[in-house]
Image (cartoon, rainbow over all chains, first blue to last red; front, side, top):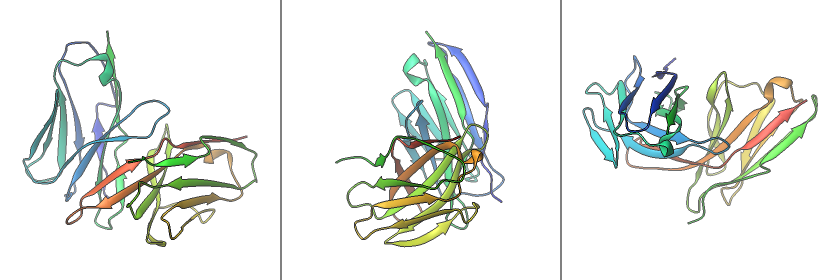
Length: 110
Length: 115
């Protein structure tokens, strides 16, 4: 069974600090998506990465897909309280079922 | 363009009852997927429907079923509810891009509480 392991599970940092969260697997994925979910809401798609080594930027968020397409990272520069939420990575397994990691719960302290 | 809508948003049921949840996808999206989200297990895939056909299914018991209508709207049914079915049920619609790129757009979810 393909799994996506996210780390850390929880992260609480001060506003203005930088942080990186990770999404790792032993399996190759054709693409990976990152989502952010706020309490009481559904996940919101942030980005899709497709090509090994690909880097995508979304304002202060930088997403990277590993060269072997088995892992991905999300780096946030100068975190703000509005970045607080649950960050989820997801990918399609070999049976085309979408699997999600359990997420990193991020809390930015003002 | 309107987003994914789910009804109802909140539901309280008793063990043994059955429940039906509804999802209206983004206009033009033909794929609808359902997920169960719990604090312990995270987001778990239930099933996916595409053009009224179940295209994929997760590892849930047969008490969980779904269907999709010709207008792409989807319903999910859970029979003989158990306490462990308490969860946030999320619906996502998607348009499959070139190759196997899946970009899903989620609704706000239905919070089901079984007592």
